[in-house]
Image 1 (cartoon, rainbow, N blue to C red):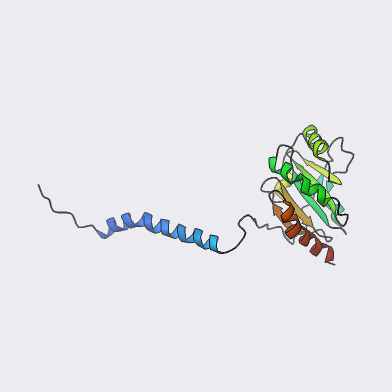
Image 2: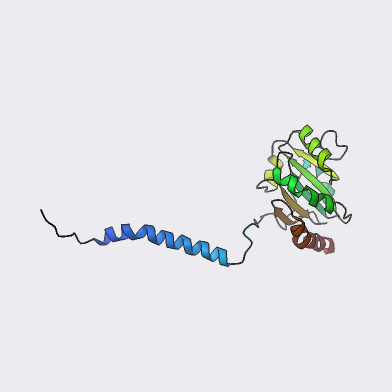
Length: 191
């Protein structure tokens, strides 16, 4: 029986060091992201600056409002909010949308995502309706065209019919004041 230790081969050293090197590489990547100062909650949209997707959704039954039609965006700034009655963050942001609806410089429209009409009507009946048009996207196909990651999401459509800004997640009063309204102002000022 031999008590002498085996000398590690270069291959064995690499096998032992590889997990440590991978860990250090990932830790460095995460640290760089953390220290970059970039808002990690901001999800980029490939549609910014492009025309809003061709949309012609039927209206919410019993709402007495028109559906969502992208042709109606021309010549005015439109805020399009993607919501659903089953979405808890949509309830959180609803008071912010009601406050925004008081500003008559832009139109507020909605895309009702994968929802039952009676539930959407109840949601708006209980919380108030800030929208001037509501299109029903029962299957969620139109939301895919818009690049929706989940609900809620809010888009600013410029007078030229192009997507000027996209907010992912529930709007807070702070986000509406510091980010959304300046984006709306910029869209209103554009020729």
